[in-house]
Image 1 (cartoon, helix red, strand yellow):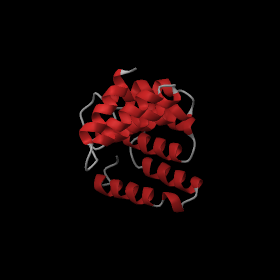
Image 2: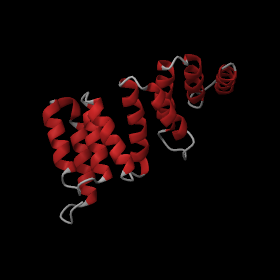
Image 3: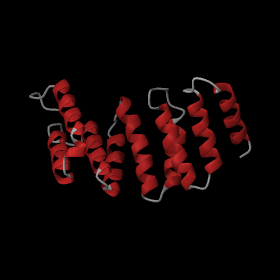
Image 4: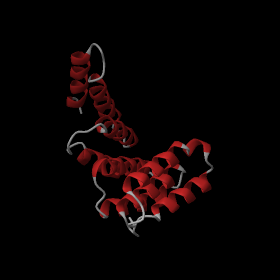
Length: 167
């Protein structure tokens, strides 16, 4: 990022822009993301990620895939790295390459835990369904859900484990 821009301001501007997503036409939204990303040095991982997310959210999966990969290769860190992995896997699924999504998200499950753990499982389940592994998808989803229920946690967890062992 240039010296003229404060990181906290830039993050706020990005958040404000994403908050307008549903009320902004596609071309305007992408142009605004491109302008914000342009405030960062060329090839900056965060700028690449935001550009990828905008392309993905507006239905341009092929462009998004390339940008997600560039962002990850450029050393994207923290929660954005995990979001990029989830979003790339989803994009690959939408492009008919769910097996690649399964590989990415299976590896991601071994990474340190954070608030996106259930999102990893949810998108892994979608990829698994597309690869013909619906029972494993259901088991993973039920196991993840079991942590959030007010009751029946142990029972649902055991049922999920049984489904997984039957594969």
